[in-house]
Length: 255
Image (cartoon, rainbow, N blue to C red; front, side, top):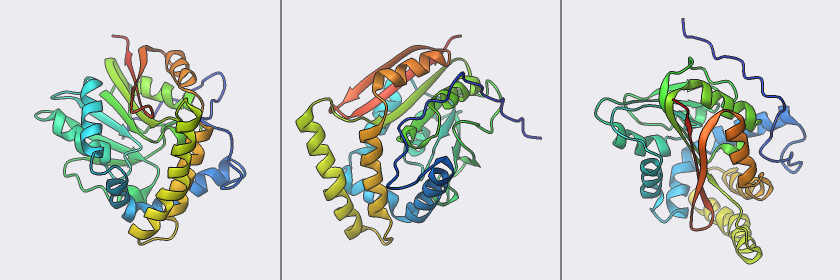
């Protein structure tokens, strides 16, 4: 029988952002909205990402994983694996001897993962379907804004890591400068949905990318994320930034 996850009991919930009534009214609708939009847009997700990242996404993810200390033989848990964009680069770094398990609440997204040897599991960051101390490295790529409770998720990440294990959370962060923030907002709210409509085969894809910006704009600041990591028991929590918007949160479970 698969070991059941321990119950995380943080003192209070810490959502990554306030509810967004343009998309949902409460947490039940939030879960339903995310399930629908990620399942529906999964077949187009990788194609649009390649266009928007100008082909540089793979290299950046691989470099971020290396900066976080991922190496040969690691047992990796990729939370919010989606279509496998982070997992694909992680697999290149952990051979020989490593293995990777992916967890995601969206069957549609995981249906697009074409990575032999990767075990896929339905699950949420706040209640990971994995035993205590079962992996060396936890990664999460651009999913922090979509979970319900940062405190519960970070407690789960800490629980499933072995002593000395490492964490990497990739996220897009709102620029600190007003002009830069306005430029990124214009790009994400107008240019990206326009590209999505031209590239995608499914109508809801443009809605997904507009939702992306709205969650970026509303997301809690980096200091709050780092404080939540420390509160969950992590050591050496820090943030590395690329191009002013790509945040790499890293931390270590004391060993």
